[in-house]
Image 1: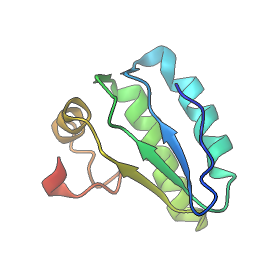
Image 2 (image 1 turned 180 degrees about the horizontal axis):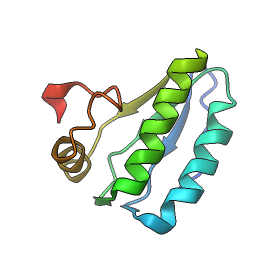
Image 3 (image 1 turned 45 degrees about the vertical axis):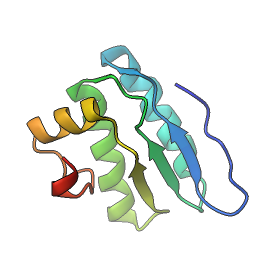
Length: 104
């Protein structure tokens, strides 16, 4: 997983790795927690995702839910890859990830 990049004028960008499988879930959770400490928000770049499993989608959905519940910094997705979109749609997780239904 790539490091979060600070953009002086806006939110942090967290680029997801190509493979988001079970071993990637814990590191993803840690990176999200660190990134969400930034009050400017987080943009999750899912453009490079080639494979994603339920475990990592649960981590992402949990982060979205937590941010909504505590009114934390904004969390959004950009450029979700076709494989990412396909699995999100298959699992009906677009609402949990705040992704438009027509994007999935």
